[in-house]
Amino acid sequence: MTEGGRDVWRRPRVWAFLALLPMVALGLLLAGRPAVTAQETPPPAAPGRPKGAAAAAAPVLVAVVDEAQEQRTLTLSGSARATRSAQLMPAVAGEVASVNFRPGQAVRAGQVLVQLVDRSQRLALQLAEVRLAQAKQLLARYETTRGSGAVPAHLIDEAESDLRLAEIELAQAREAVAERVLRAPFAGVVGLPGAEPGERVGTDTVLVTVDDRRSLQVEFELPEVYLPRVQPGTVLQARNPGFPGRVFEGRVLMVDSRVDPVTRSVRVRADVPNRDDALRPGMSLQVSLPLPGRRYTRVPELALQRDRGGAYVWVVRDERAVRVPVLPVLREAEHVLVDGALRVGEKVVVEGQHSLRDGLPVVVIGQATAPATSDDPGARAAARPTANADR
Image 1 (cartoon, rainbow, N blue to C red):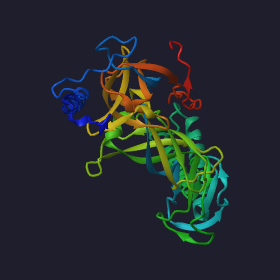
Image 2 (spheres, rainbow, N blue to C red):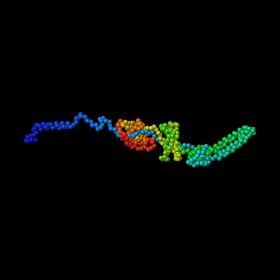
Image 3 (tube, one colour):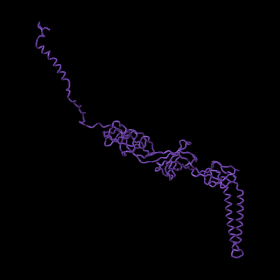
Image 4 (cartoon, helix red, strand yellow):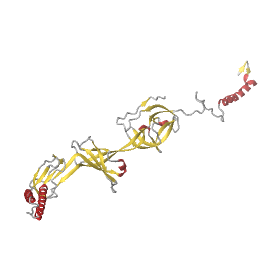
């Protein structure tokens, strides 16, 4: 490089400038890098929040804790029997003279059902009646002479004794005739005849059955664990496969005084009205026995959470989330009866549990409508959010 015929690279100032260029470049590079030992500056606090402020409140949807009675329904197998039932057998052996009923006929108390042949017994009855009349006449004749001495006193005494004997013989003859007649002991419905006219029967032959089935008694075995919760008057329901969809209402009549040591159960007898005569003695019935228990706090099913430690719910107390362990007792359609440190009227979280931890501030943004209680016969309303008045 030349300037006016002279070599510019030979000037001392140019060489000095070129020698300083690497040092200037290195200085600029070092000035642009942060120091290795410098600490990072924390980000500035959000506007309006002081340094060290608490975490933001979690939005939740809540429901109110209420109370309900535990209701368990025990299903047992039972057998129906007539309120009153009789198998009629003759008091003496003999020949059937007539059958005076139709199977399934309703009969009144005292109605003649079966008649045995009683010809000889009726003849004996007539003879006893004649002897009684003779004894009465003789005694009456002697009585007219009493005190006159015409008839000795011992003859009058004998006549009185003969009269008494004749009365007894007449009663025996009447009883012999009555033993050959079978009458209905009470009003009811008769079954099939056990013999036909002309057949000879013995004292062990069942000639007819009579059942009073205006109401039926149902017997079933109750496990001993439920014994304290069943007493006379307890309402129950009975069903039979022959009547699908139909329910027969009844009540417990009596509970046996002993528990079977083998089955650990106790016999229970219930009364089921049979006004339209639909049920029959001997039918199998499925008995549904509601067993009321103690009262428990109740929460919506959505509030119940589980982990390795068991079941729990989140409760809002002093605007903070509190984890409360609970023991589920009975699950129903839309809620669960639980046993735990809950109070009626407290608010449990039903939505937003995933972001909660114990002690975290919460803000209630809505409240779910509680379903109808099990004590309320009305239909349960579906849970739905409602506006929070305190929002």
